[in-house]
Image (cartoon, one colour):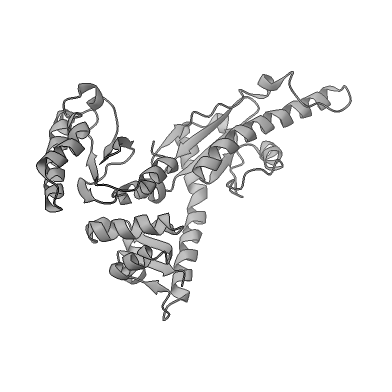
Length: 341
């Protein structure tokens, strides 16, 4: 799974030539055998693009050598994923299996082509699902299409904290029970907080009302959504958990999209908005982009260099980027932006 930290490392990499390559992968079919051949073709395309910007054959051979080695790596092609992203630079090669099938795309230049990754990180509405009951707790990484348990170690039920509770009360069974529950939720909170601070993703809590109250009373999670799902997660499969979370998130996300478009619309007639990609890219170079809005189909409509410039420099200069369906875009443009000044 591609994380925000992965995205940021690619975004911040400076200097030198960079090649970005995306391709769909075939799972469980005869077409799987075609994937190495497709990668070879795309690497040849990358070599041509490097030649177009003045890179000599021996330079492109050195740069692309790690990626070319993948073609004959049988073990690599046994991995299961719906998509592959390859990033090559003088600092080495980075590979990511993608949870969605990207369009085949190859770019070569001074910046990595990150829109398909942004589409995975942002456009796929990624979030965390935290499930809690007295018997178990789990933190999931979720998108519109998938739910995967994270590697965060959580306490295995209230019984797992017996003997290490911060107890202060009378010696009654009820006092012990309350102390153990508080300690249990505190340990869950600490483990989740460490992970959530790195990813900065919204957290959907699925738990019975009493457990929701105990956990929220700790008050240490700024990314915890105010709405939760007051049900017993132990009675649901992972796919049911995902379906319930998506249902609850839909009106919240729709409201956020509306607020963004209302903000853009309120500035109509001034000089702090634009739907012209050349103007947006120039503003990004000067650190003026506060909010970049991209269509989910913008890759097919915008030159790669302009798109990479607008996206990378907007984010590197502290701006924000959002992806909307094409039919929601201001003036039906592939890109729009709100400027700081």
